[in-house]
Length: 151
Image (tube, rainbow, N blue to C red; front, side, top):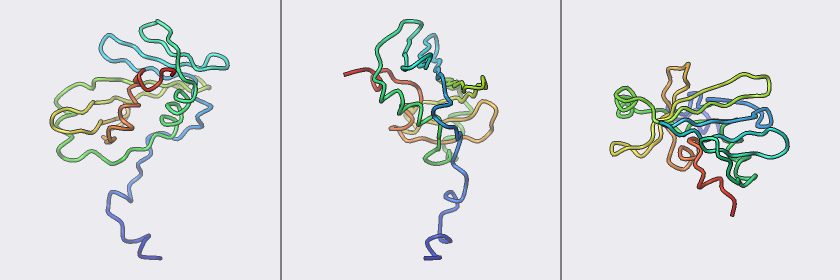
């Protein structure tokens, strides 16, 4: 049993947690991509979705799943040597900002996959660590309405 704890790859010893909040403390999430702003907010008892100020119906369970993902955001792996030039050579496509009940705001930048990699890259705005997310989780981080809409 001891060997299972000691024999790990070096990457598995590193902290992969970006954020650790109670999901009920997050009151809004906004993703800005170019001229488009997508947001979900919890003003009273339900999550509301807006896209450039236009409200659209959203599945409450899917909205809570997104909030839960961001509240306990943990990367799949760390960016590799091949990913770092991609992040260094171009601006991030999306900036995600979320607000917690006490008014604190937290932001991270997202680079979407391209022809050189199928992973999403994420870096906290005030951080220097570059994280990597596989497509499934990464595509949720940019607030994709197709994954949130009702029925």
